[in-house]
Image 1 (spheres, rainbow, N blue to C red):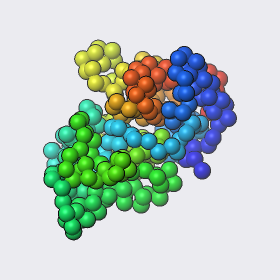
Image 2 (cartoon, rainbow, N blue to C red):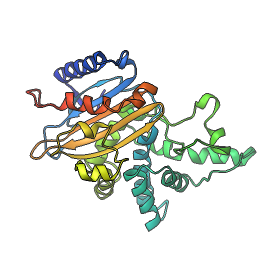
Image 3 (cartoon, helix red, strand yellow):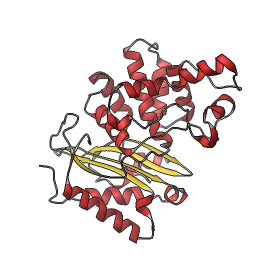
Image 4 (cartoon, one colour):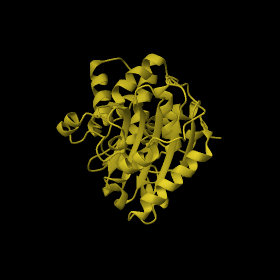
Length: 301
């Protein structure tokens, strides 16, 4: 059962939008995208109060940098449990991991969360213990008891050129152990952060500050890797506020966005677009955001 109430009008609108985007020259679009889309009726909603629609929301896909959202939440959980020390360096890494999507910062955070380091191959008991430690974030995720999280995998660092040594071996044959998320799982976690319902409200406020994106054109021009242009934020009204985490690589263009216009309730849209054609398509996510969020009478009741 979804964490939101399914809405037939939103489902019809989502399917119409996908058909329109397919007709623009994206054959087979439905087979290469997953979407979770939620509206809220309260300006400051609680978790589970939305209505929504989805397409392939439980399809397990490589998440690229969207996984960094889960590592940031895990870091706040570890801090609350006194499993890792508070430090300026950790805060710098969390900021760079989310705000700038730094892979180097992500590696530092994963090492801290799991008590592991990268390096040459390991053997025997040392290898077994290393692998057990790397699954600690997954163990915490499963402990949340949210059904949307059942099939996901958050145990790998993120890379520019790719893993080497023990990290490469940990990916398994045919990369079978690489990170994996669904739009439903991502939306559930993003909603929890934005409604203050995971770890603690103060922790969620810190995470929200990291996810905050500027839609100001000048600021975006000054930062070519702003996680807005080419992603969902580009398709939003200029007066909206945006909190998001994007992911992009040669085989994926993903985004998880929570946004809110003045004096209106928030909305959430999570889109995973997979394959080389989708990865290169800088217009797909902005166009989908525009189509789904144009003003209409289809508002939540």
